[in-house]
Structures are given as C-alpha cells and as structure tokens.
Length: 449
Image 1 (cartoon, rainbow, N blue to C red):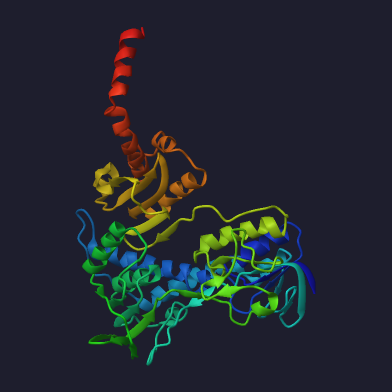
Image 2: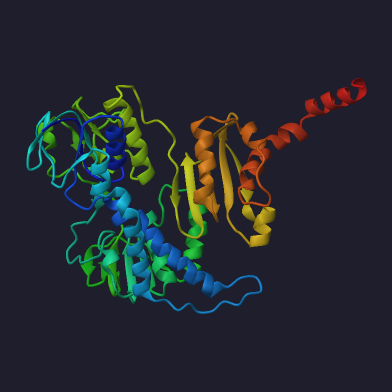
C-alpha cells in the first residue's frame, strides 16, 4: 500500500495528526495495535482526573465549609471505578476506529515495524512519502529483585480500595494518585529518594507537601533495593503495604519499531529529533512522548500541528511555543516558562490577599519571574491554577507586554485577578515611588488648564 503519510501510534499525538491530514486531502494510514486513544484516555489523564473528582467530593464532605459541618463520606469504591470507566467510555468514540475511518483514514490494527528507510511492515507492506512515529511511552519498571507492583496501566483494574497503598515515585502521577486514594479512605505512603516534584517551584511543592501530610499521606525518602509483597525494602528499613504502585516516570516506546533499519537514531530518552521534530531520516518525524521533548498530552497535540504543517502542507514549522503544565492536586500547581534565576525580579501575590481569596478562604499564590520587563515564567498554586495558567500561556506565546496584563479588566471578585495584581505590583514602584513621575505630575497640574 502506498500513502502520503503513515503514522505509527493512535494516541494523543498520532490521532490529531491523522485527522488533520486526512481532512486536508492526504492519503493516511494509521497503525495502532492496542486501544485507540493511547495512554491519556485509557490509563492516564482521563481516569486519574475522574478518580480525583470523586476524591474531591469525599474531601468536601469530610471538611464541610463556613457554617457547614463536615461529615464522614460514604465511599463506594466500585462506584468510583465505574465512574472512571464511564469517563473513558464517554470520550472513547471521539478516538475510535469508526470515527477515523469516517474521516478517510485507513486504520490498520497492527504493530508497525520499519524494514527500510521508506517501508513499514504491518501485516502488509506500506510505503509512504512521509512517516510519523507517535508510539508514546510506557510506565518505567525498574529491574528490582522481588518487585511485584501495579503501574499506571494496571491500577485501574482495582475493584476494592487498597488498605495501604505504597507509591514508589514523587512525580505528578504519584502525588495525584496519593491524594486521590488517601481521600477515598486508603492509607497511603509515598517512597521517593528525591522528595516530591523535583524541578517544580519549591514554594509550591512545600505547600502541596504540607497539605498531603495534613491529609495523612506518609512520606519516606529512601532508595529501595528490593521489592516486597505490596511494599519495598532498603538498607536499614522498608515499608509493607497491601498494594505497591510504581510511579517512576515513563519510557519512550521504541522497541520493535525497526528504527535501525529506518536510519532513525534514538536513546533511552526517546527518538532523536530537531526543533522541527525531524529524525535522522528526512522522511520520518517523531512526535509526542516518544520524541524525548516532554511527556504531556497537550504537548503531543501541539507536536501534531507542527508535523502537519510540514508533512502535509510543505510549510516550515518549529516546536518553539512555551508549554504549560499542571498538577491536578489540591492545591493545584501550574507552571509555564522557567523558575527564577539570579538577576530576575519576582513578583508574588498571595491568593489570601485577594477579595475572592478572603471569601473562599483560599490559600496559594501567583508568582511571576520577570527579566527586563518581560515575563519569563509563571507559577500558580491554589484553586483553579490549572485553568488560570491558560492566560499566561497565551501571554508568553504571543509575547504580550506586562503592561497589557496590568491594563486588562478581570472579573471581580475572582482569583484570576492575581494576574493583574502581580503585574501591577511590578509597575507600582516605578509609578508611585518615582521622583521623575512626581515632577511630571506637578508640572502637569500647574501648566495644563
């Protein structure tokens, strides 16, 4: 079979690329041996957020609110997991074989393997003008003696709430599932050598860490050397639970693709690509988790647009936009751009200083990293941080001036006012504590009728 574009992988990167290319008139083949929709739909973003929604309801019942007494939640864990499965099933038709075939995509339910730089075998021989590798990533499982554990792919098969869930790892998935399962009633212990959320804003991490401790999540810093049934062991200690969950990150899926035959270079971090997502074979692109440039669903979708412009329209395109990320715990943590470096100016606003923060009893903050009047990075921590970071994603992508943010009208009372308050704080001393400005004002008041 000869096509214009052959895509290996039907997940968050491959599906939008296939849909866009087919609707623009290209002849497209999509190879996916597993479940359509990839990890995000089936084992990642969607099920974890559905679990967190149930966990949030349980915590709201437990805590109550102003003038409202909290009551112990009645958690039906099988019903929670049914909600998780229903969320997946509701979204799945959008990613289904039937939908993509209706768009004109030839969907082949087989694993693709390169046998030459311009040829893939998937039950039949496929040649194409361009190829796109979008095979994603899979949970990293270390080679540890005695290790028997759940992963992000298998934890959703649980039918009963774990009595004591031990989570090995300290990244976003680890903290989200730790809070989720703890709020639903499980005892939870996190084991991580480096602590939580390495690379994120330390103040935001400290805020989340304190919240997790207050909610009863136990945390241990250790380097496991042996697995136990439901637990881990290390020199001088260990932890025994009813279930062990691995949350140690994800490894790019490159095995069995025949990359050597295709002339495509790769490492254990992923396929080697340039800023245009081109591999070492000019016919082949790599995008999404397998490309080694980050593992986020919205990044994969962005990559699809970059490849679409090049492979289908013949236009140059580079992956250069700032990419936001969010951790959907309570408090939420969202980040775009970089953290503060020497020479930066930092403007910080406590949510408790906003009127909406007062009415809601909100805690958290907004923090801007500024260099020469330009916003270089933003960290938000608190309610709605994952939604509010969208404003800053637009601002950094479009290189919006800080003065524009300061002059924007935000709804009152809202936590989104933190953006205007932080931007205003940058200009405040330059306007109100500036002797030159005061001289100009006095002159204007004397001279202007």
